[in-house]
Length: 470
Image: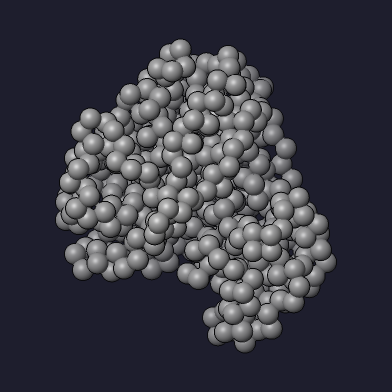
């Protein structure tokens, strides 16, 4: 039996979870929760990385005694270190505007086809490659780039490295060779010296200097990679997954990347998973639009269950929007943007809060449907069940709507998938008998609550989709 600290950092909050794993046992308990989010300073939007490190240390201390600790977080963002190992400024938030126009600049040097053939990565304006290109001459002072979990691991242990599942999200990682794409980096003006040695999920980073030598383990440090470990799929099932939170990461688990022209055109990504798997998925805007809507209304989180209950009584598909449209990416007045998007497609905007929430949830379910169906076509695979893990698994309306939209059952849970996947990889690294993903998922099925939602077949999702494409 192993007891570990799973540090799970999201875009709006972070948690330190005390996790236990062993024969017939898998559990997590929240020890410390703290807010996270962008900090506006002058024209730029930053992360409070020192605050995150302080909270991480405090949470691990509160969780003890422990056998190990591991950190997962969101992807793409990074800190730059100089040759002495000092941080060259706060990491910039991926929603900052500094990459505006950068993808077009890069495309003049390296085509989208070339980028995809090497990295297999979805084109997103905030990919690490574009962020680094936007740094310009500031890169001259940098010796190393460390993604957020790797930066915190460095401060804990003094060991510099990059865990593969997160490295694969940078658009600087060769998805076939599973190495840094140094030639690509050089072509776009990124010095290859910035790319640190790669390490596998499950490797021990080193002892934590401020935590009495506690072993720090490199888990699937992209939170989605950890969450997919804890998808409770049964052997032999044809499953899709949605890691549902601020973003919805929706797709399939593959043994090798899918790099065809159709996958490129559909903007699917091939990211590394634990044990050499590929996460073939697309980023869907996710519950970000709902959380920004609540912020616009100055609506506390405690009122969300009531809003969702009222939304469930509102007519389904009365209005839908393309939740992945670029206007929904930056912070701002989402209800006004939703109304404008509805008018632009000839629909009556939702009237009232319940109708607006219903529009958001239905639009998100429609995006889930579109993404999962495209993934199945692109890979020639059948999808018989969709697993929703993460915070969205609590949202009954979202789960029901996704089952209706996709036309297959939805299995919702576990909610704490990222933390559980973090714990499982640590436990295996520290000696527990969990030889492969099948064994880890069997333990998840044995110990975690999962709810099943069957499609009702009532609403016309094809017609709703047609409203957005006509």
